[in-house]
Length: 447
Image 1 (tube, rainbow, N blue to C red):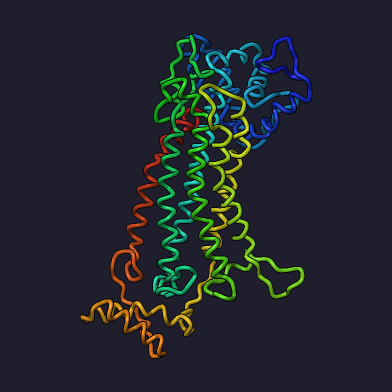
Image 2: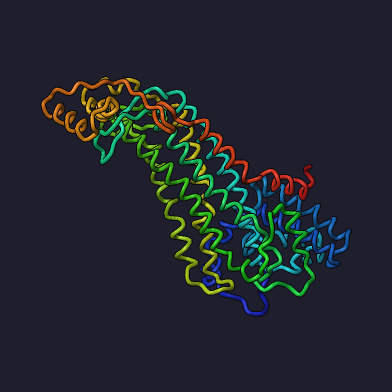
């Protein structure tokens, strides 16, 4: 059995090891390539302050690039008896390079290693989430423009209320995603600060060059105060979770709408056949399973901030093993949200819209406000117009005019989709992803 990085003369029992390690090896596979990338930056810095020779650095970087490629292919494994990803990387280096491989841990702790790994992993995932959000946004805007003239009933209290349109419905969710992108951007900027060099949370007596590792890894800045860097464990995950929850909230609401509008009682839309399933007993059924699962998964993601908060809440400053458990709920959440975004974009692209909903007379009364406004525009006091139309409805004399003429910004006749697209474009540009990608390519020698 391989020894632990921290182990001395006393060995723990198998049961205690199982309990304390938990799912850490499984979770650390998410972090493998990021751990290697951090080690490349750290060892590059160590050479500049005399803790590695140029030849030692050359050997270490070459081997780390090989390990990175293994992790990138999804072939990285943490062996039985090896505690975590940090131990596995160091073990692999030591097997190839001997004592040289043991030098890479100088000036750092597993505490700042995992802080760094989590930040590198999270900023990569946020980049991917932002791209998927933008893809869904584009599908929604395209459908909004395509169906901008197709009217549908709007609801309040689930009662028919006023005319709406598919242009408004699709466009509303597009603009919601544009706002969600601001949460993602804020989370990304908070994440994109370098904790490396904080060690166990109190710095190091080695003359570390933290500015260099910040530059090498493409961070915007460092977490300057080493105690605060350690305090960021849990805080970063919680704030990122709020951003994921904001996106998930938008998708969950869209999924609920689509499931409801797909039902025979509404028949506003028809979902793609391959996104529905049948019943084992009822041959006519086409259940909207994909959107129902999307709704459930997104509702689960909306609980993520509370899960993180309840694990890390009320801990004093300094590291505590409680924080390990955050990985189990946090790391898998990104792929789950990406799956939901991809499924939603697929369905929105293929959704079929009923263009004759308002032919049904049961929707006639949604045009009553249009009539009130017409009378008021012609000079009748609004309250008198309201009363007249109400009495006409009660007497069965109301005849709807189904032509609508809304022109103000954001209404049926003026969707402002160009402005919404400009807003999203500006929000995407605010991430400055290329700076990080360029730094990582340079560190890996892939320019």
